[in-house]
Length: 240
Figure: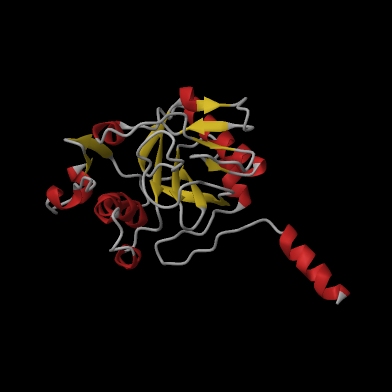
């Protein structure tokens, strides 16, 4: 019995490590390479259902996974934030610059994701000060452990101070595979989620952040990203 308790205690003390569940997911770079990439441009993906934040750094002509971090807490379940006080955590495409960094936040360190973005404003959504932060506490934010937040903040800060103008953050309800979308096909958010999938798919295939803009209240992806496909297939707005 004592041996079992000891083994359980050792297991619970191990750091959480996300393992790839599909061919499109990357294996993190080695610690040595990771240290060398401090100051390189970075990109962030968040997956609510998997409770995972992924940090990527530019290595050569593509972005490689630096680390996958367990999200301590977020509130409101799946679906986009619509109004102040609904306790939801945002979904969509955001970008931050040096002004969005809060090194002395009351929640340890924080990155304001820039909600509401142009899409959110076009839908009439409200709210502000939605963050990725430490202290493991969340009311509409993405809360991390302080150790994880320290590492994420350090890489974002170094990238911005080393010349990256903005860091893009893509926030998804889950990994946007066709299988997962089919699983959630009855959700009232389904049309909105379909509109996020091109960004996820592009990064999964190209290992480069998508170029996303908003036009007429819709997320629109750079035609150069879509290639020969009709861009109207990739522009969606949420069904009210």
